[in-house]
Image 1 (tube, rainbow, N blue to C red):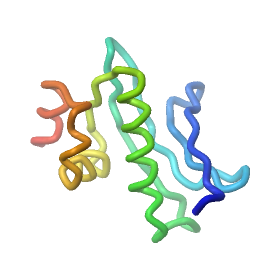
Image 2: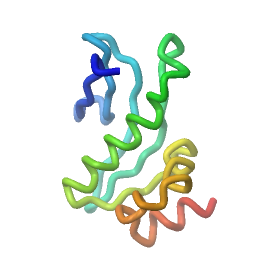
Image 3: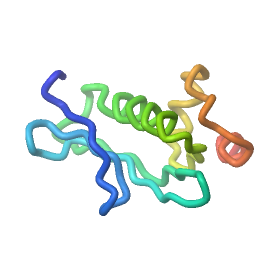
Image 4: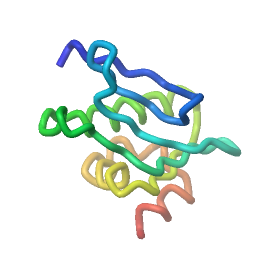
Length: 102
């Protein structure tokens, strides 16, 4: 797992996990008004079963926290991760908590 790197790709509006140079997983987002809305998370088929979904979620939320943004998890995977890891929910504002209730 140490061969994976986490980066932000603002041109593509997504966080990425790469293995070497190859894309392994991504978390797509939109930015605006001090918020980041997570709209889709995907682990490429050849990388499934390695915990990369959780890894990109944790890394993305650390970056959100570092930037002082409020997260809105429209993506069901990101919302589910936050439900399972309540210690990460400090990045949710009212809109983020509302999105998790859906």
